[in-house]
Amino acid sequence: MSNKKRQARWVWVVSGPSGSGKTTLCEALLKDSCLKREVVKSVSYTTRGLRPGERAGRDYVPISEKDFLALDKSGALLESEKIFGFYYGTPKRAVLNAQKKEKDVLLCVDVKGARSIRRIFSHHTASVFILPPNLGALGARLKKRSTENKKDIEKRLRRVKIELSYMKDYDYVVVNDSFTDALNKLKAILTAKKCERTHVLHSARKPH
Ligand code: 5GP
Image (cartoon, rainbow, N blue to C red; front, side, top):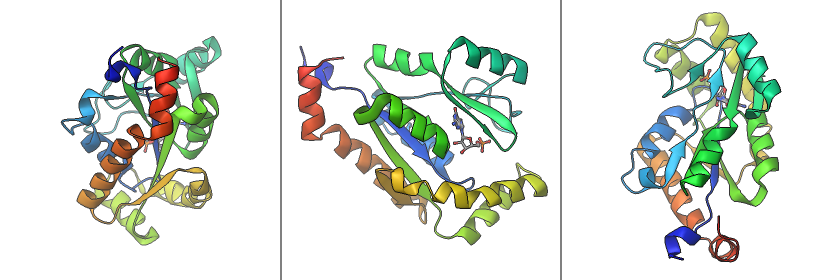
């Protein structure tokens, strides 16, 4: 078996408060010429309507609440959470398909979803928490992107404290004060993690 085949696949989990820039960082990460061959993004189901600029199937799969609950009941979701009044869930097949294609999968999920994913994939999960440089920056970023109304922005800001209390569970924390630096750190984390001795040796004994 080639070395490439022997590499186990990682489940990458990226979380962070609304406005931390995690989505933009993940998008940029997937454009990296090396990583894009190795990593695929899971596209979540959500009952939240698409924002301007978001595309169905690329950013989210929009779905009615009734269909979401039916999907969840059928066991098609790896995890699901209700956040800001909407349901979000990771499709099981996104991870299974990635593993079949021998690729890593990147999940951009909230802190509770991340906890569920860690429980399922244990040592194959690596998690990164994206931290804004300061909490003041969050409100400013949310207002600047103007995708939420005032009430929704307040809801998102109120949740930040809860999200920060989960930061201790993450393997890495990246402060997004400079986008380029944060992206380079994220790329470095993925690259180093893929070369971890225990991971490579474990994968060699138990090929996927
Ligand atoms: P937004 O509405 O800003 O796109 O996402 C709201 C929150 O839901 C973010 O923290 C985002 O990471 C999270 N999220 C997106 N997809 C999923 C998912 O499939 N599962 C969970 N648990 N959270 C998700």
